Length: 190
Image 1 (tube, rainbow, N blue to C red):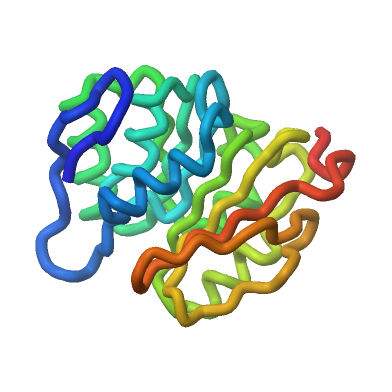
Image 2 (spheres, rainbow, N blue to C red):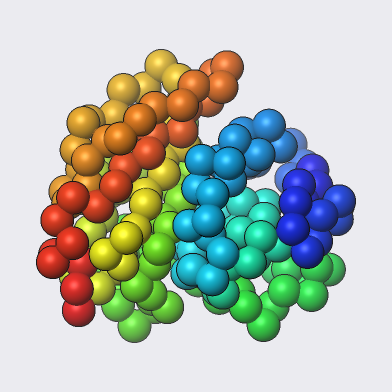
């Protein structure tokens, strides 16, 4: 696993051992950041279910002003912190240890509003998908926010989730990136 572009291009990242974590592949990360384009540079990025941190670290490498990483698995958190340390990115990173549902309820844990919310919950975990479908809280997202949910290609997500509408599905083999755009900006204001 490596950083694909930006200030840390080519930097190797440590990956998980075993099969407990499923890092976003280089190919899908490349596609993700092509989709996001200029949305990342200078923006605030939220990486839910962060795992090794590869997606959020890529965002930092591409100019995100700050990334909040949310992960509940203690081994993944250790891997994430090691990757941030080796890339010397701790100054623009905030790591929150806990479930995504807990993070979304705790405004005091936020560093938003976020311009990009990226979520990669365990494939086919319907409880975690339900959390994301009802994730919006006032102040969580900026008026120009984009939400991307990575999921198994066989999983159909709804056409809208709370205050965002599905714009497009991008399919890469067994992985789908579901792109949502905020459709009711006043609900994201503080």
